[in-house]
Image 1 (tube, rainbow, N blue to C red):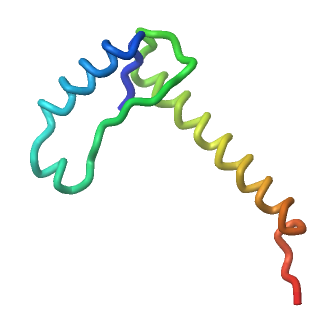
Image 2: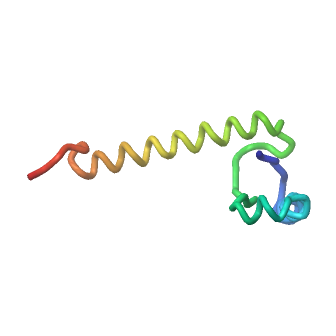
Amino acid sequence: MVEVVKGRQNAESTLKNFESGQSPADRHEGWRYFLEKSTLKAGTDPTEATELRQAELERRESKATQEGEASNGGGGFSR
């Protein structure tokens, strides 16, 4: 779930609101809310923001994997 807001104070306030509505059981299970800088515009539709954030995460992970393979000789085995 993503909510895009403008400014640190707004983000911190929104985070507190989310946390206050969270059940103790969910928190105990490890579900947490966090702040993250983004280039998304404030007020972006939450579903769209979630999809865009997921796509960006996948691009970063793919790039990191490719860079890791390149730094160890293409990912092959050495003897």
